[in-house]
Amino acid sequence: MKLFCTILGSLLLSLGVQVGVFSPSAFVPQSSGPLSSITGSGCTYSTSGSNSIVSCTSSTTLTVVGSGTVKMLLIAGGGGAASGGGGAGGVITNASLALTAGSYPVTIGAGGAGGSTANPSTLSATAGGNSTFDGYTAVGGGSGGGVNNAGISGGGSGGGAGYSSGALTGGSGTSGQGYAGGNTPAQTSGWYGGGGGSSGGTTIGQIATSGMNSAITGSTVYYAGGGGGGDNTGGIAAGGNGGGGSGSNSGNGNNATGYGSGGGGGKSFASYTGGTGSGGILIISYLTP
Image (cartoon, rainbow, N blue to C red; front, side, top):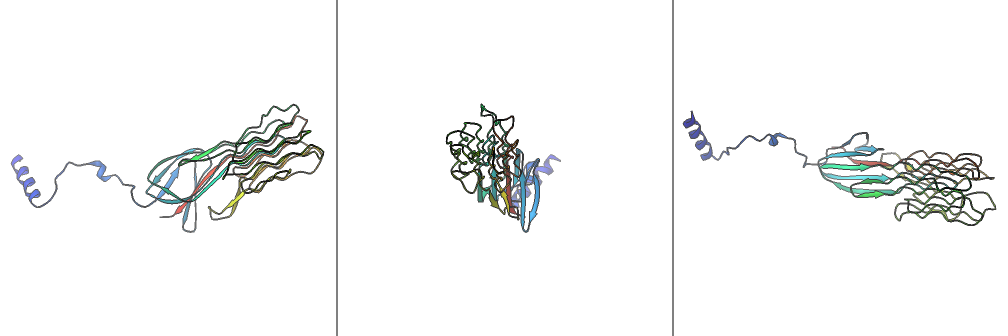
């Protein structure tokens, strides 16, 4: 039998047939071809025309099979409000992002908590959380200021300034991701600055700035609006397009809705709180294989 196998092996080699050891890996599906799927725990999936849409609202790991280019929308969490409105979360877009086969960690920032509008203020409102994907970082929205507090800078969009007997400034935004929060003048009118949004800024005003719109899902949707400023005596300031919380002149500020929007400011000098910001999101669109 051994002699037979030796003769057979020699014959096969003479005919140009390669003889080798069985390798299970040779039968494992390879993923070096065109992009065929993107999946992740907790994400949702939809289609629009010839495109597949993946939307993730919590941190996860995406598994990419194949290689290709995708469209991406990454949004951080919106900032919480106090007297001033919360800033919108930073927004990053890429219409031609190259992905290769592998695993991609995703972090989705939470919305910031609302803070006290009482006097004295304790700066208890918090900024939104950062969102990250494939080397990109969208910065969380800045929190709104309380009594005698300026809006908090460094967020994707700045938080609005709080109530003060003197002028205060809104927080600055991150370049390319958002805008500054509204300033508060010396208080003769009773209102406080609105939070910065993702598609325009305001220098003085209770009105929040608008969010940005995107059709990455196949429908035009607004995201990341600033929160409206609170008021002691006047009208109620609406939040920016995209889900920014509206301000209040009689109680707590309103919570943000949607994705990456800032909370609305509450009435000052009482036991009230500003609204919370809304969490971020990652949306990816790619050609359905």
